[in-house]
Image (cartoon, rainbow, N blue to C red; front, side, top):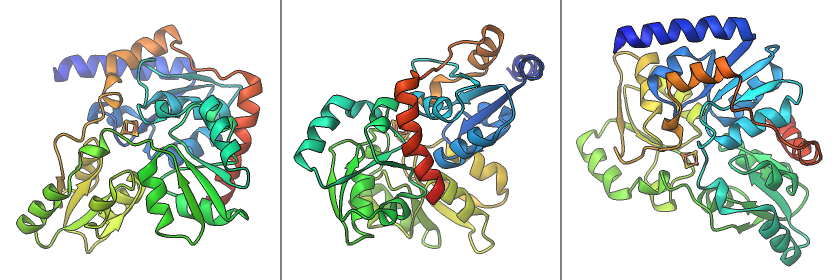
Length: 304
Ligand code: SF4
């Protein structure tokens, strides 16, 4: 297996050079994908990286909305998503038509759109946010009423940190919904000295048990701190690979082995190679939608 991977990796690196490509990978990707990436990060860090890269081709190892965000920011670059079926069920819980209807019901509300959404939905929103900057984005707005889409739990978490009125959309992440409070309670008994860090896509009853509520980038940063020796981690399991790799000697315990995003795991080394060979599947956003969505993404990057 290792030899096979070594041969694949060599081919990927050769093609990457030939195509003038950069490989970006989300913290939830398979370990072997994280290991070949030029940059691994959370949605905010990945969009910031996409915006500033000089490479001609971006191979996005993540899910569809992430590659779309790169295409929104970099219309002159080729953005490849090695498996076009890598979607996000939460992003699919809203569409532009239903959002337009909801906006009519709340004409005074500003629309804050979690980056886990399609380009069409971003184009209908006032500003985007990621889990790393939600509260900052909400607070940056003049409006007192916020329509927060599509993640009800991230929106609920933001509502506990602001005086603004937050109207929630009933979307959620099926992977983070598998993280249960009873599992955290049990692990806290087993590892009483461990810090509990969870992602804000978790349910409020899980968030209530956490010491820290952070994006994956925030969890990575916390783990580096000298005082952290053990951490109970409430997010998608892929992050454990990076936590262990960057912090040898520290202990990281995933709250649930069920917290696996099947879409994130669709990206494999073979598919990365094929996408570089064939320069496909390419993710493109029609210009009319891209230019509107770009305004929402740019506004977020300005406040981040
Ligand atoms: S972990 Fe959840 S929010 Fe993230 S891509 Fe998977 S389904 Fe979507």
